[in-house]
Length: 313
Image 1 (cartoon, rainbow, N blue to C red):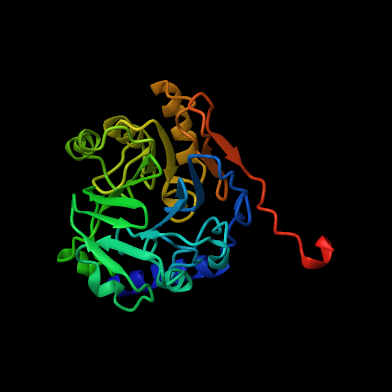
Image 2: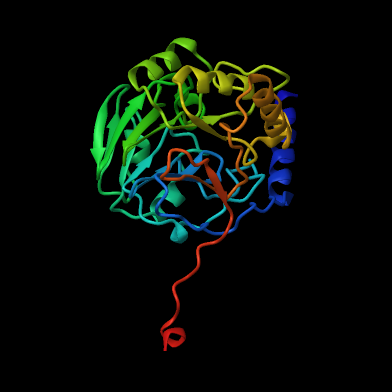
């Protein structure tokens, strides 16, 4: 009986995956980048963000894929791999399929340095990046002009389900470069001690990338935060600005496609942090201008290709 029920459930999931039509991103292609901005972030979708700190780039949890076996993508990634400019560092928070996507990573430059948590080595061995480095909590390394520090979060490891029993490869990161500091939480549940310690060790975080889903009801859980818990992480680490991630791409049926965004908006109003939390639409670029007095900007305008030789003539 249980076997029949399992087969029926898998059949439903497979049918859903095969028939689901993902929503298009708000921006298709790489938006224009004002290089005078000190810091910028393009939310490509899910936990995939292209950061620029000064003239150094970082790509987080690259995943441009569609269906994850039988889990459909609810919103398409905003770019293709060939549209992503060279990044000095690629950061992988953990080895789950929605954060560590081998086809995407193989399509990226082999000259980018790839960082992942200790314990992820068995899953990363077949990749093309020449430099693949495993980091333990609080371990620091360099890539280009960037300083990257692995920091603890509260999630779970493995890749295939059962291997989570013995594999605890998961991490967050603090990235320093160009006079800017960014915290990337990857995927996490809430822990007051962990995030307060990150804030104490790394004061002056300019931007925090924090997940806000999936969750059910009004509560998060041990391994995922809801929007209110995400705002608490934002406060705990003492960041100046926050961009939410990890919603509207996968698992939207768990929480509801629109609910994380609407719950976050309500929580932001209650917390009185309007103007500091930016819920981007997939593909949008957030930029921090050079002048301290200027407010962050959101860009949808696509990057213009250089004129052709014919046009120049």
